[in-house]
Length: 79
Image 1: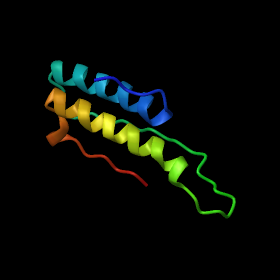
Image 2 (image 1 turned 45 degrees about the vertical axis):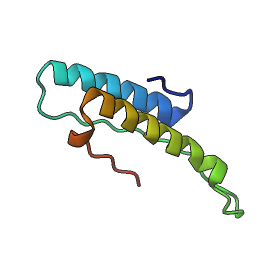
Image 3 (image 1 turned 90 degrees about the horizontal axis):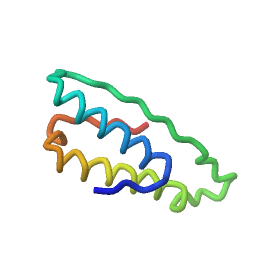
């Protein structure tokens, strides 16, 4: 499955590829960190456009990890 071009999508693509490689090497655990910013709404509190890239990226990561058989072994933390 293809990933989009947004920051979270690109990070998810890289993480999924590294997870696939680590699983093939027999690694028990891997950890990945991704950071995305720019969510200041300057008082409007309208985050729909800002958060849609996070939603899309996480959806794509989940879809790819399900295809790889790794989703049931994955924890995603968003803060």
